[in-house]
Amino acid sequence: MGKFHQFGRAAKLASVPLLLASLAACATPFRADVSRFQSQLPAPQGQTFAVVAADPALQGGLEFALYANYVADQMQRLGYQRASSPETANLLVRFNYGVDNGRTQIRSTPGFRDPFWGPWYGYGRFYRSPFGHRSYWGPGAWAYGFHDPFFGGPEIRSYTVFTSGISLQIEQAGTGQRLFEGRAEAVSTSNRLQHLVPNLVEAMFTDFPGNSGETVRISIAPEGDRRTVRPIR
Image (tube, rainbow, N blue to C red; front, side, top):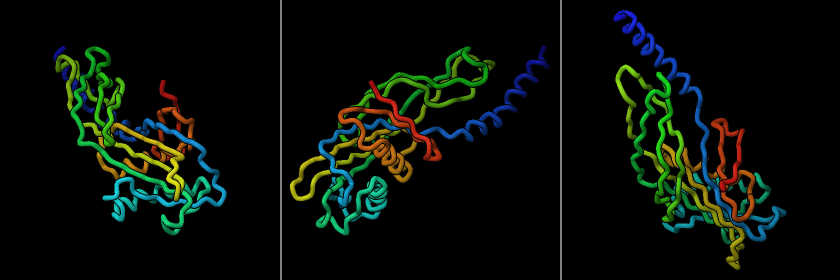
């Protein structure tokens, strides 16, 4: 019996690298909650635009210029033309982005659910978004971890998650009339804006301009060519 017990544990431990490799190969889609509002957004028939910083402190920065180009690419894909300067644009696209300082999440593997692998579950909670308001992220599985029943009891882990977001407002140049407002937020274990902002921008412009007043959860596949949109009730 003792030899069988040792062999069972050895076989399980030997399988861990293979299971980890298979999980790593299956990249997780990026998910964002997107809220959009619109009023008389003009059709892209000769309309020109310029992307400007909603926070004046960001205007002219190299980092902002990089992210603004992602927004400009999406606007051009829709058929709008990029103006040479904000002064000559028909539309001003005010853009902002940010990520919070993170918060600790604690997850445990449920006991006796699966002798090898099980999702880490937890309860949803309110969090402070990068734009000041409070949002709610519901319960769900966050990650997978190895669980060995021979060690006794569920395994408890802690890690940090971050809330990132972008905001977008489109207004008529000259009059300042607001034509579109949008916000996209995501919760992830990364705080790298270079990775987060392009995905948030793509989520914002998925099925653009969307249904006014509706919040949807948008999933973007790692390859960027498969997207799903699901209304949030």
